[in-house]
Image 1 (cartoon, rainbow, N blue to C red):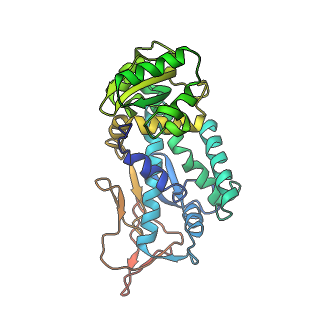
Image 2: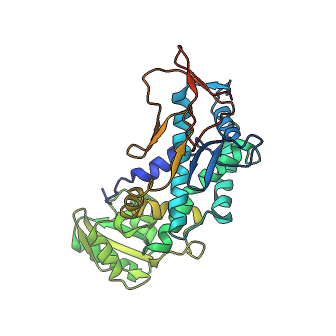
Length: 325
């Protein structure tokens, strides 16, 4: 094992639910199903989400299904609102990155909706959220990337011999493929560009001691002896890094700044959130719309008149909610 890679559950949450949430897109039926601050989820948006998730009859859908999709919408809008509070707004750059991702996904799987469709636009907006959050962290925290290759040997003598061969002009990648005992050896020792926290402290200290691009002295860690070829070690600016594409910048930030993400998550639902009572009540403690009943039931998704964003509806004997006005 060469690295210490912390688990980043927040990134998995963001990416695992991409395309399953909705946004206010200016639809024909603009009655409000849910709101987060000034953002609203319209009736037609919810229907587009349900249709995009293979719900055949969106006029009558189980409370549980509707509540799950509304919860996902609230999750994403809360991330957007939280970033905006800190001065980072969702913009064309984030949406363009999301569009390219979506078009690439559609090229592999035609079931992915086109960006020009109602559900496709919703997917695009929410694919943009990880890029938005990464830019928020870039604006508020020190983000550094270490771009390097290395070779790993068992003894300091072997490391010194490797450095001597490099000094004689041998190619680093070829030498790493020949002598390195680490997993990256066959690929020439390339470790890419990653957050320094990805590595054990001794490795980072050895790379920093190079003082720029160059070859390190032998560095000992729990894995053995490293010789590190540093290509760059410094701050990250999206669009201005020699090796990192904008997509890779997002991945680096989200994988290397768990503390910042956790701090944001603690404030995620500290905002005005409301849900049409046909579908339940939002519980910020669990981040979910809860239906408040053990009955399965159905919720008719036609327009409902509500007071203060919490319509009442009348529950029938079968456990369904008639929401027709």
